[in-house]
Length: 172
Ligand SMILES: [Zn+2]
Ligand SMILES: [Zn+2]
Image 1: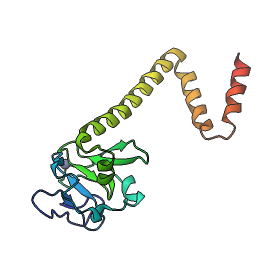
Image 2: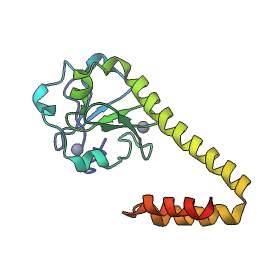
Image 3: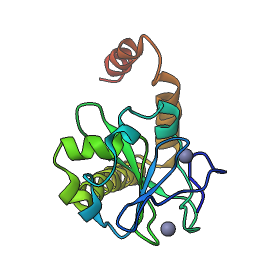
């Protein structure tokens, strides 16, 4: 099994009850949510420091060969992302992430974190989609598309509030 982040490094299992590790980046691969080995049997030094940000931002491929994993945000003080393979349920922790899970007493509720974060994200996307659809139907395609185009242009404009005020004043 290759490390999903380093790609060429083989994952190693120090002993039978241990999760798989990447010696190069300190990442950890937990299969079957076997958190009985979590986090005590693992030497703390291996995961002492947080991984480089770049590793947390990249989405990896399941080490067991199931393709791209799906990220879930762990919404704590300094949020980070866990990755899970939907096919085998394996969870990838970048260096230091499992320790933070442990420190925040989340180890026993890994599935919950994951499904909550996932559901929130899904719910948001769904709400937005149906909100847009309703407006599209009520306003008509032409106006809807013009507004969306304008929205896109104004999103990062420093004077966007002025633009909204102008629009409001001219219309009402
Ligand atoms: Zn690695
Ligand atoms: Zn998998």
